[in-house]
Image (cartoon, rainbow, N blue to C red):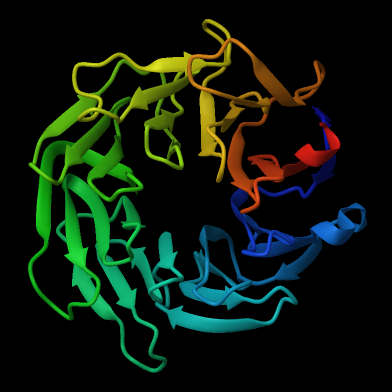
Length: 344
């Protein structure tokens, strides 16, 4: 096991997703073997409680609109709501279709999920049939904007923006050739940025339709995260954390800042902005985890891989909303939780 500044567990399955509850008391992880693991941070030394959820693997994960509950989609075709005590409710059952993407907006009560070339939107009202959105190519990613009013769906050659409250209607299409995967919105809702199948990002400024490309990465960009105030976008895909400036009209024509990592070292596989401070947590392909700031030469090492350990990429990072604790999970199922209050 790697050396960690906190507690560590070997959960022995790919960590698909992780999130903290709104009260910062629990971490919840969705695992590649179809289980969901819950850690009560008031007694973290007792470890995770594990619940069997899917008959197969979990493919996607998100906090539910109900505080404390979470949604997990699997290759068994089910979207399942999981409570902290392991109680479950099937939200959707698509039969033999895999549910590969899910996103929610607790404040407005919308849920969206996707399978293949179809996306589905559910509102707060129980019993209503979902709105079904049919697409020309497979869905690459989903994201709801900060105000909870619009849904971005990526696919081949474009990103479509749909009004969540509408039952039908044509989307606003943001076009650019290539396969668009992960998608995120800036905190002010004016920028939409996607990762591409090639080692690049593409983005649009909605206020005037200006689009831009960010490239030069050595590896596929598996993670991106806007700072809380939106002043920069942190990304993986390089041997350092690349941070693009989004003040003063966006990143067009500007060089990024960076921090952490070593030249020609393992690439960054996960990034996540701190919920309150101008800091970024970053995980690497070899399992290393650091926290730092754009342009700084000083970083805080959180997890250091053992020299005799088989490298396993960091797949997931999650902060508690109060910013006191960080969870890092890997493809091999190692999970580390650090309480920064004990480090001060």
